[in-house]
Length: 418
Image 1 (tube, rainbow, N blue to C red):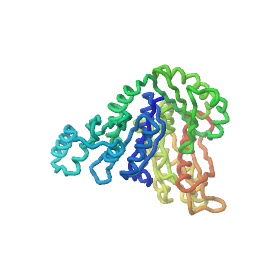
Image 2: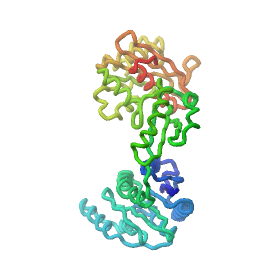
Image 3: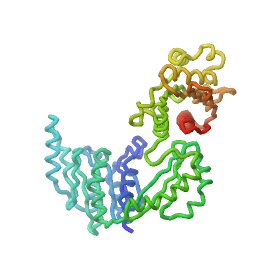
Image 4: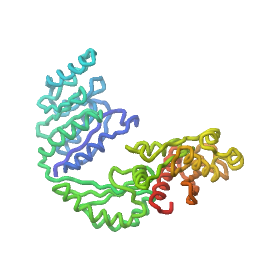
């Protein structure tokens, strides 16, 4: 079966200075187009190593899709490396040169000589226009007709080039007549092993569609993938398996595909015409950030108070100074008063608070590192607190506490017992 490999270029990827979001995006777009990805790899800004990666990938697959290293600087070496791997020279692509000159003239800046190399493409290649930047992409061809499709590393330039030029080329090249549709079932509050226990028999019963279990961000998802002639056919194949998985995981399924815990909570509360506020201490604004990342969140999420210092808890959330003195900031009473204060001060219907010991210091025998308390106040007798002992370093504790808070809020909004 025809396949390609993906190569991401950039030393910053190998040093952990930049997270590679291009490779998963390219892989998902190719899967949707019915193009099989055989393998992926990252390589630094080294001409010989990039050329070696291209040769290795071409030995295993029918083509290579690359991103990165097409800029004007001395460490942008993808063009030269592809020429080395394919043993070809370069041709000047005049339209790209004219476009660059126009862009620099528009902003009143001189175009340096090093920018010219962006328009020098491997001989015999097919140019890929870049209306969103100065570096054109290209599809270069080996003597055996295998190909190397190269795109800029800047996502806002790469994504439209991939969708509008590279994917159509690949579909025509491979005669792709199938598509791969993916459905992600999002869960919260269910551990990976618990999910596996509930659906283990389904893994061996299906090949198309197939199931994968993904654990991330201190929760787990179930992914269903189906290959068919059309997206509608793939959806029809997925539907009965999705229904069975949801039936088995019903108490933890909050949404699908692009849904997030925060978006699911806001959708529920919006339907209930309730407004939400947050009071955070140990989570430092992470819960609020989850809600404000959702478009339209201001219809339901009114705001948050990050009350790290006790003086802020007193002045902004009306926490009783005596409660802080008697019990300390990490206590049921203070958590309750933080939630109550956030609801009243911000004019919300429901408020959740967090307070705890994120570490690495500050723990005691009675209140160890990882102890996090949550309180929910809705102005009724339903208001209550929870106490959790969370594991990990400071970052992990804060992340786990944030996901725990979202789990509590989602189950509350669903009318479930958190």
